View 1: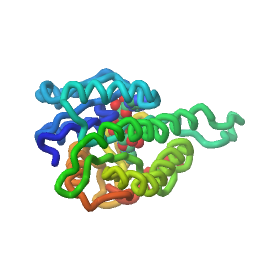
View 2: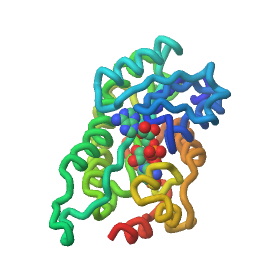
View 3: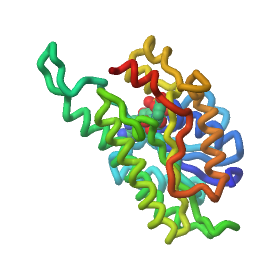
View 4: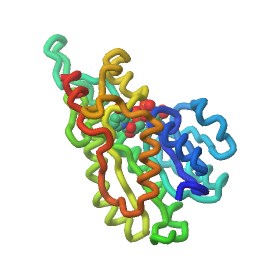
Amino acid sequence: MVKGSVFAVTGGSSGLGQGVAEVLLTNGAKVIILDIQTLIDDSLKPFADNMCYVKTDVTSEEDVKEGLATGKRKFGKLNGIVSCAAFVGDVEPIYDMKTKRLSSLDNFRKEVNVNLIGTLISIRQALPLLIENEKDADGVRGVIITISSVVGLNGTPKMLGYSASKGGLINIIPPLAIELRNYAIRIMDIAPGVCKTPMIDKAFGREAAAQLHNDFPPRQIEPVEFGTFVKHVIESPMLNGTCIKFGGRQDVATGLVE
Ligand SMILES: NC(=O)c1ccc[n+]([C@@H]2O[C@H](COP(=O)([O-])OP(=O)(O)OC[C@H]3O[C@@H](n4cnc5c(N)ncnc54)[C@H](O)[C@@H]3O)[C@@H](O)[C@H]2O)c1
């Protein structure tokens, strides 16, 4: 299923998206990277012939449509999309007693815009291309994988926009799966725990981020380890319409921002 297939990876320039791209390319897929930052990790450079990069803002329907069309022109088809692009804004209390300041609503709006609406745009724009595929032996034409977070299941204080965006994403998966079965498309969401990526450095600061870990095993998820799990989800046709937690509880992260 992965070998010879074509996948788009949003947010593929960094962190988990980069890990997903690396695993898919290593296993013989072609990959279209859609990211707002023009950076290709060194680990992906040996696969230059099997990948293409299109600078894309996932909050723009036109950008995502054009990015996917560019990839399809190069590789001839699209078998799936892994939607990793996301933004984490300032970690701040709803009201700061010292400064007497309310938290930023712009921050909240941006997190919902990129993480929830941007992911929905990626799903919407991939759909017409996936529907063009012939059905495989399981009767499936394509697969969509979104990335939420354990924060979307539990919520995290001082990260209201991020919590709302990820909770919203988790809640659109079951109804979308019911609609998408009419087109023979699978959709799955993965809710990771703490991962070793630039995102947690940005949210908590490098030093504090280094202390974060999942409950058990007590460490952070590596991007390539995450990519290997995405490959498993792609290759497991009976996984559909739900959110899988990957990495367990997040008590330590919650404790840090309280
Ligand atoms: N790092 C963690 O601990 C963790 C935990 C749970 C869930 N997640 C989720 O995993 C996914 C990957 O995050 P990561 O940790 O690899 O973060 P990251 O910051 O390393 O990568 C995110 C990527 O998304 C891109 N991006 C941001 N806004 C974009 C936009 N508008 N359009 C296109 N691309 C955009 C960035 O340029 C970046 O390359 C995200 O959905 C994140 O919320 C991360």
